[in-house]
Length: 114
Length: 114
Image (tube, rainbow over the protein chains, first blue to last red):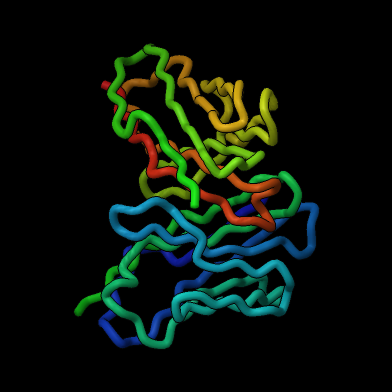
């Protein structure tokens, strides 16, 4: 079946440092799935951070970026300089279009030290 | 904007009990989902529904029933709660297929079985 593997947390980074959360995927019956990063901030519901549906393209939101790399089947989340408000749980996910379900990774809990 | 409301927020049950979780959305979305999240694991799909009175099984449907009598509501029943079971159940909705569109999540129902 489909699977998503991401950096095992928890991850702690100091404010203004750079961040990368790794994500690799495996999808059956489709060469190029749609890829997503979802985030859950403390006390809030899970919400979409960014999505990329075309291989080779980059998505960005709130200073985060992720590039869809079909060669390495990866979709790593990066930020050049993190802020305390970025503390959250981040989930990488893949989808296959239409009414197919989305498959989520286990989540990475990120804590930013002031 | 819209909102997804899950009730109750906390649910405590006894072993063998039948328990029902409810979800309402006012986005007028066609597709609704129930996911289960266990500590340290990704979200796993239990059931989804692409329209009123439609039900589709996910990876984790055994032990659960679902009902979509109205477009705006989607309920999930744990048919026989398992002792020491603890998980968060997340309801979500999307316009048509989640994969290309955004999934909107509720804040979750936390289940504890004594």
